[in-house]
Image (cartoon, rainbow, N blue to C red; front, side, top):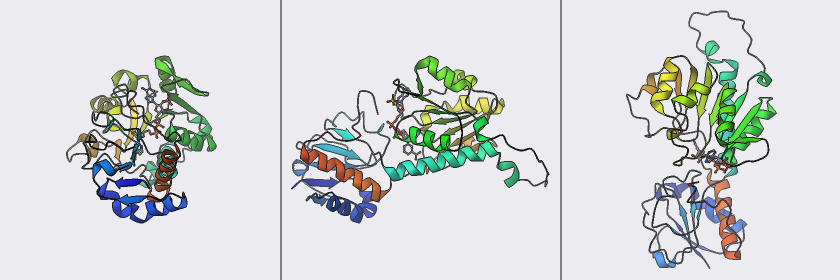
Length: 304
Ligand code: NAP
């Protein structure tokens, strides 16, 4: 019977019932604990905020199962030699699709000018149809591709960009330039890696059409903050809706808080949902016990 160490203490209240239920549903007989002698642990359910940072003594651990989608805070841990999986959770994906679709529609329809209209201005300008509003998504993985499907269902022409070539998706530097050139709304859903840090620098921001809107639910460092502020001030970027930041919580006094064309949401685009995430964890433990390959394995050299 495998021993599962739940090593994300602050999340235990959410998983205390959900994880045993998912393990039972998957037919897994296991011992689920929040403390254990490291040499007895077969699986570690993990969050980067966990106090567990030294994996060296976990000599028989078959996998570290991360509850977060983003793994940039763990991939560099030299003591972590066990297989690492990240979270691809239907509940989390659904949340991201809702956040991206909601903020896309806000900017597409120009809702702000009707919601905040102190002068009671009767401006009957009608927004274009979604089919006339090209959207680009940088990062066409689990989240980006789900957002693309939802936006396409609303008729937005969506261009996707990813690291590797895949059907219907641009890649490479030329592909990026092409993807940015048409993006009236840009969604950044890349992981934070050495390659993606400051990807949206001044030069790349300049490639976007005049007045483009940026939605960043990926990671703060994907965008050069100062370059973004300069592009907003110059009017080249029409608005930025940012969910993620280099420092979180976003420090009081940061110019993003007060910039008239920045919307700050406090890293709430998509949360891992305990019930659906527990099923993903249980399935990976089932696979580990059956000697099958784990789902959502992280390639540490690649960084995601
Ligand atoms: P994923 O499935 O691993 O997808 C990542 C995508 O980014 C893939 O399409 C990948 O290309 C692409 N990519 C990676 N490096 C690239 C590079 N150098 N150049 C071009 N494309 C690159 O990840 P996911 O589950 O969709 O999650 C994406 C990110 O969302 C996470 O890493 C996390 O930072 C963020 N996130 C935020 C929240 C929130 O609440 N704000 C919640 C969850 C996740 P390939 O397809 O070619 O591999």
